[in-house]
Amino acid sequence: MFWIRIFVLLNGLMAVTIYGFAQEATLSKTKDLLRQASKLVPEIPETQQMSVASNIANAQARAGDLQGALATVYLLKKPQDQAQALGSVAYSIDYSGNLNGALTLLESASKGQSRDVGYIQIANAHARDRDFAGALAVAHRIQDDRPRLIEALDNIASERWKAGDHSGAQQNWEEARQVAKQRSADEPSVEFFLSGNAGSHAQAGDTAGALQILREMRVMAEQRHPPDEGLLSTLAMGFIQAGDVPEALEIVKRLPSGSNRDIDLMLLSNEMTEKDDIADAEGFASQIADPQLKAHTFQEIANAQAESGRPASAIDTLDNVVDLTQRAEALASLAMEQAQRGDGAAEDTLGRAVAAAREAAPKPPDYVFANIAVTEAILGDFETAKQTVRTLQPDSRWWALENMTQMLAGSGDLGGALQLAADETNAYPKACALLGAANAMLAQLHANKNPSTAANNR
Image (cartoon, rainbow, N blue to C red; front, side):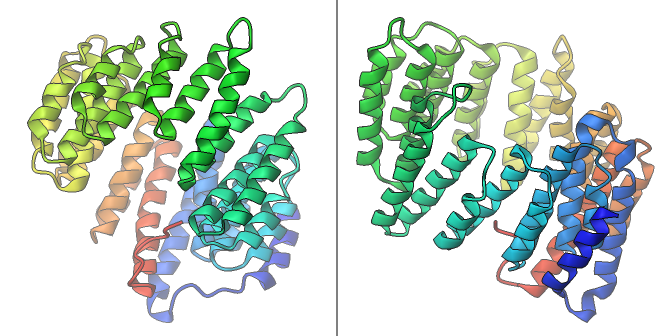
């Protein structure tokens, strides 16, 4: 079989013993759990197979089971799905220090955008590690997705600027602009790419460079008749990112009520929230027309208030969300944020979320109850969490089960995690439950081997 040839080729490239002999039993168990999860992939709905298989294969590669990882990948029927899953495996191989092995694997995948996703992930990782030569070499392998090549070049430039190599950064930004000018008729406009270029400057801390590009773009945009509302909205986002709120506001005021304007208002609210200007943040949020986006924006304000030690103010902020279904979602998200931080107010917020969800008509989506279940588990009430999960449809309970088994196994209760997986009868959530337990075991093995880094920080 094709994957066996690839495995033989890579076996010599990736002869890596990840963990010591003392941990062999745990590693063996981890590999077994992942192979059990892999066997369930063909039974999972086709629309979900690629993401599940990619996650399982990535974990198998991290466990050193490359043969199992490739077997999981080739359970997928579509070449582009296989290519994307191979990218996940290649990322792990590269993380182990074997860039050549990772690239060899990606070269075996079908050409197309899915393979290019793998290249940009590896290029970005090398840029973050300040291996700029390696990052550029990988980025230049992107052949079928011009926007991703431009994104990769912008990301590399941003990291080089942060590292103090301003000359090298400017070269990479200029290359990205030149690639943008070669766009084909069916690709986004040059201005779209330039806005991303400006955002890269802003992210790197080159505010002057970002504003120069944005102001040149604004002149071009204002010469268009009729005005391109999408481009103007994108410009406003850029000015917000670069910290020029007044210029962003000038543009937003000219936009009609609707989705483009709403996104800008959300970003303005977020910017004010970061500055702890809650009055202006709420003022921008209240102007958003789309109810769901408005609720999400108020939720972000509430999260910031709770994080800064003002839980009562956070609850008051969510009173601005009138629809009970959306308020239940916002409260559930806030409760989870608080629980993850160990905030004592989490239990009260969770109670409010449950009450709102019960009163809401129509009933909130299942993912709201999945958030509630995971929060219950974080707070240590696994029995109630299990009861909450049982009410969910299979395509909604996978996320909750994956998180719950990871928590149980991570706390030392591997038996409880495996029982939770065993009790599940549907292939999709069952595979994810097994994956959650395996990921916890991998994290512990990694922590034992590298006490200073308890997780893969990439």
